[in-house]
Image (cartoon, helix red, strand yellow):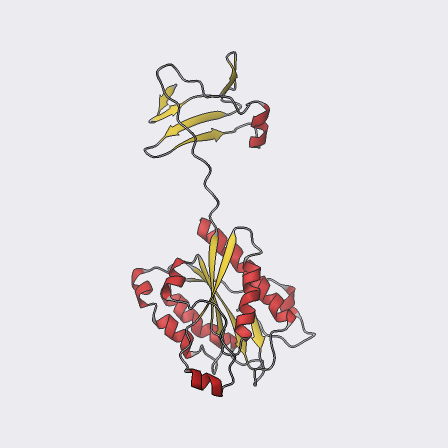
Amino acid sequence: MNKKDGYNECTYTTSPDFTLHSNIFHATLIQSRRNQYLRLSLPMYPSIKLLYLFIPQSSQCHTPKNTRSFPLSPPRPPTMTKIAIIYYSTYGHIAKMAESIKAGVESVAGATADVYQVQETLSDEVLSKMHAPSKQDHPVATPDVLKNADGVLLGIPTRFGSMPAQVKALFDACGGLWTAGALVGKPAGIFFSTGTQGGGQETTAFTTVTFLTHQGMTFVPLGYRSPLLFNMDEIHGGSPWGAGNLAGTDGSRQPSQLEKDVAKVQGESFAQVAKKLSSA
């Protein structure tokens, strides 16, 4: 066994008279304070599967007498990219879009999504007079949800071309995250619902991007990642800024299949970006 840069080095052998030389592969046992693991460099063989042609599982690393070999650490499980989908919805349109967004996120291997709703500020009496349905059974979002996620997708209905007060209240509660720089570099995307065409989906994006900018977050728009956005055969929401729904002035129009398909595309594409950023 040789000493090199503080590490114990050795080569695997399959028999006393046959050594796999370094031009095939070189194995290094590295002893750290807490763990030991095997490092392989393969200058000739691109696939580690080929090693099994040469090395039976019973092979041992040959070391001089009076030395001890170190056990190999088990491989670490892959890290999942966690996406938080945070929405506010009075009549359920954005809530349905959020489920399509979630399906898109979880279609990406290694990505997972949790759905949260923004805390309601209107009283039950007011909501009853508005004929608003019961809220979905999603947990309420807090600033810590934004902090702990690898990426955030925000579902925001439009109120006169801007975000609702409920969403603004959540953003205003994130002052501690701003002070700590906890959201700097974190990817974020937006999806929408408005009553009419041209009813403020893009201006809602503009006003939301100001929050993302002050937090130092990375805005990930939908762009034209899907030809569905070019569909002229039916009325639909959505734009390069994000997926969208046109609810109608009385809220009677639920998300169409096209709008939900665009939302799924956004979830998928966003998860791919967030996955790359979280592993960088």
